[in-house]
Length: 369
Image (cartoon, rainbow, N blue to C red; front, side, top):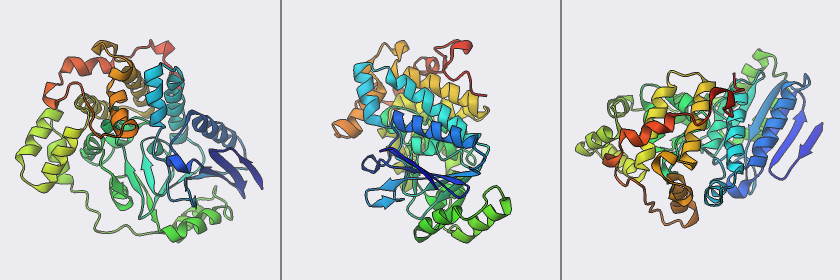
């Protein structure tokens, strides 16, 4: 048995499997730059190590393993970087998106135990997995528009590939899915009962994961059927979220007296009006992109979120700084968006987000194939 550990990421090789435990439970395993670097180093080393035939990753809570997978990126770090001009945030997104790309193209089985909270950056390190396992307490979401950002970490790529226009619904509203709902929408593969998590984790060390029949038998042993009650309600999602603009969506939803429509319209009214329209454009462009160009687009978008020169803003004036302030710093839940109303967002505010600030040969993700 080989074992290495850091404060935030624990790694272990047992049998023919490399095991990773995210170990920052007080922050729901939110990713720091050091965690991203450790994960990348580990995955690259195991990719080229013939003794390791598969990788499994899980989170931890204050009581021990499992319970929470990863709540996303460290948004307090983002906020501090925005206010101070810390250039480390540039490295954070470049290296995080590179890690996301590595996972999507990983040549060995990569098994994500997506128990508990799986949001933002947690989706980024799990959606590229060959085997995405959820539990009855899994909660999956891409809630970035609530903090003045957009669904990054490959969100444009994997949300746009959800059935119909459910990707737009998830990207704009940030709705949280249960495990069975995630399977229905193509964001997870198998459901494992909570009591079976540790046995399934331990059993991986006893099989040859390079043998597909053994891996299928392992899945069949520890996963169960998805609830037939997990309806995706595709019709209403496709009706409203296929519309050409967020303004049209909200106006139509507000004319619908049903509880679902009124609740959905209210959710959209809480989000950054500007970033709602940016996210909608992102999803629709990414639908016709492969992963690498989609990630390069997201890197462009993130630069503009932090330095929206075309809007004449910086630091605390950005949508991201205001959204994080309201949610996680002052916690007043009352962000002051600019513009304040969905109806006031213009195409001239949105279009420059999609202009790359880098030439092709100088793009920080130019190396992604």
